[in-house]
Length: 294
Ligand code: NAD
Image (cartoon, rainbow, N blue to C red; front, side, top):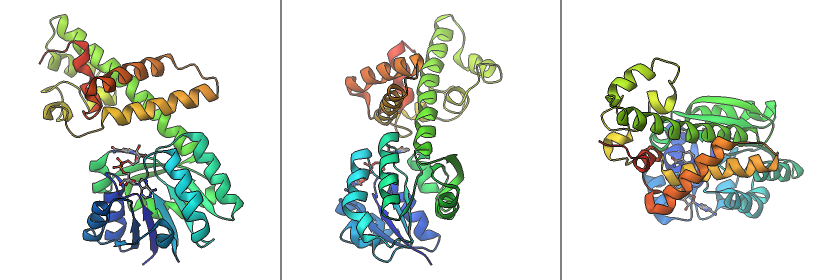
């Protein structure tokens, strides 16, 4: 039984901590929310009173926090000074590449080993233990992090040096945001040209237009497999989180002078969608703004 500190027990972290406890680990859990701590206790974790207390005598730290500023302050103010130098630190939050690199450098300066390990997969995958982890850090750090991450996921992939996990995550999600908008456009155009959308799906999903947004996440109700579209766009991946990731991608692109016209347009469209109070719906609901019928 390994002692693990888990900080950030929200929609994603709650299920991930539960899976570490289920794998037989001694999980010391901390969150600012009392409800989250109660749920962690029910899932077999031991709630503690602070992030520093969670780190006491621990062999590993996992954080799953909202954004870069939370990651920066929790590591700088609580974790770095409380954790044994032998512990492996894993930040699974989705944050900006620059902060991920800076916090890992600060960890190294204190003699600690850290990886960024953001995930693909939503709340369902976090609960089921089927996340994909993209990991940034040295090869030795990856080897140490891999068994812990494997207990929470179906795939753990070493992306490169510190920050590479976050780079992979935002590039993947920029591709997803742009491909979802393109998939929506194609389905609505097919409809307007008089095609049965299911017939278009049958053709495009086995032709060169096939992609994850169409094949497995078709954004129209009754078309393709069961998706959030069949549940009035509830559940799935919230449009507000897609916008968060697109903004991180735009920020990163600006920093390296990368031209991302499709990502930029997808960001503008999701900005308008979220501003129209649609941020709580699944991101595929953006098809409603394009004149879809049915
Ligand atoms: P969430 O808001 O449900 O959970 C975050 C938790 O962190 C909350 O319980 C909050 O109380 C806690 N927290 C904030 N500051 C803290 C602090 N200083 N100390 C301790 N706890 C603190 O968010 P989530 O949906 O679980 O997402 C977490 C991360 O995972 C985000 O970076 C998000 O972008 C990423 N992510 C989310 C999804 C998703 O579908 N929800 C999918 C992939 C990645």
